[in-house]
Length: 469
Image (cartoon, rainbow, N blue to C red; front, top):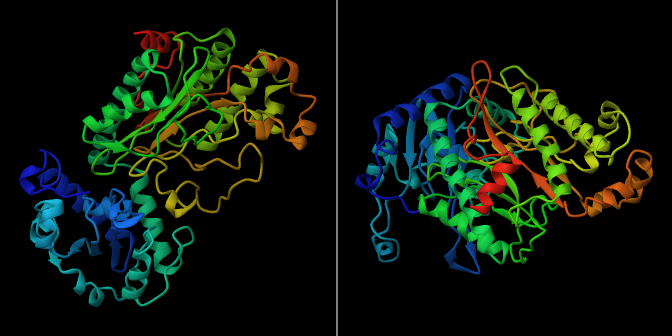
């Protein structure tokens, strides 16, 4: 993104003394965990079709965490709490295309850097430094060349790179005051966007029109989306990025949309609502099952609780609800033990949220899984993204769901394995429920939790009211 001049920054953002203090504190904490120099690169823009047609730039989250600004083709060197910025001054010839850009010394002052140098001087300062590979097409080769060694994979770092990755997980797992402030701001815009989407639905003919209403709100707050929005009548496709389908009165519309601050901090909200403004009886039955799992899971969020247990609780509540509806047959505990619930709730109940919507997943399972824990091969657990005790000031999502995925339900092996615990004829009565998900962002507090997204209702009647206006 283009970096404005210092005078254009809003108050309490870059250039603000409190944020400079926050960035300095993060660097000091890193110095106590990593006992070697650290060099982090921001990355480069990617082009589509031809060089001058570029995707919007967004810096590496690890760079953003310590530098606080999405500065392209830059690096920071961190050692003993000291930060050195390496970036070239803008080319005056580029001002025709991008406008006036801040000089290197201005950027250094804004982020509280102790020194600033041209990028060409970085090579002499890379000896013995740890890093994390940037996931674009060009920066990793530059990193390897300047470091004089091959790079570790971000998901399987080695040596000092592993030490750095572990330190970053420790720091970024528990958010400081500045981070939480920005997450709250992103959440606020996202809530407004979801309400706008619900309000727009009765007068919309396609998914695209609802998406436009929602993303327009986010853009109006000078934010971008934290991930590709999912706004679909086919909620059973978990990462559905199509939005060209017509809206029909009997459809459910699943909207998974979250805003991202210019500083990179994200939000992540999902709601499911009836296009007509009223759930059918079968849709309401399933919605209430998912909502019960959502509410019970959130009630368990507090420091020290194993997130895996929260997932299993949500799975049990869904299994119990489906038994009560006659869709599943048997004891809910046994159904969860045999993963029968995963026929309809195949994914994990949530994930970490921070500078990335699935925070630090560029590091593989290092952030989501406690040391010496590995992913399960079980059908009902293999997509669990978070398997560690919760800590104060973590932000997690809670997002149980119900989905009728043809590839799962029509799989011959699943049909045979679960033929005695699924009432397939009864299930056909719920054909108007393709997918329902309810997702909120939850802060782990000192003795419990705070639902950051609480101002967006989850109760069915309130959802219907918002859609009908």
